[in-house]
Length: 383
Image (tube, rainbow, N blue to C red; front, side):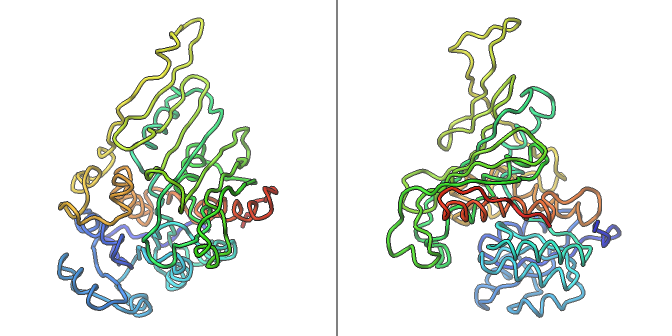
């Protein structure tokens, strides 16, 4: 069902649920001309009041159910722990709220299916808040592709490696591919298509005490997936524990004319490779060139443009760990908030919408299933 419950005549009243990473978005909504940063929700009253006092937000909830019963709340932006994503998204959609939810959509195929069905029934927006497809690096590659500078896309690769030791208690032992949307999404978004089938192998072994929570021993999982209605395939690699690597979310796009490779380490610049041809001979040493990726703040309303290049708090040491480890998530946060609001206004489709969010999430879920089956190919469901 197409979204029908648009809001065009007033600012959209947004409530944020989860105020760790979620607090990164509060000043963005406060400054966005189309939003009313209306309410916040956190289970812990002291943490709720600390955040509310800091950002001068008067409407505060410790009960998510009470927030959903508030008729003044138009949209919820969910930043709660992973196990809560699907139940809270479904409850909000059934309450007639527009939903933005941090990744992943859910932790099972059934949860993804239920969210898609709830969105269709509600007619409201569901958007998974995937950072990479709004990062400046991805926007740069997408612009090159749309202009024809890459030529025909031949292969896509993503990786997301991160040390999650010390994170909250639902993280230890999490199967790597259950949290794979950061490397899956750019491979699919650039083509505007969905994944069809996946094969994945697990590698290595995490510490024995980490294994029982999810029954997953793998330190690294690497998957290859086919893309529906395309001759292009993609490969993604994911690690969370016991693998030495600086934080890296990366995306490589190999084209017939030019290829883009993400930087290896933070503070480097990515590389463009240009194919040497008879008409345009390029000496071998000059095929690769470092390139400065531009910022894309010009795509945003002026009041939130500054948030592409700095944290929302403005002070050193205030940012959430996922923000500092991820080099600011490529300036994606204001783009995400703006895209969500514009979808609610009906000015553009949600990207990713419910069906696409499910596909991006299920690539990882089905990849882990494949790894448990020794690399057996798994078809990705459609709803």
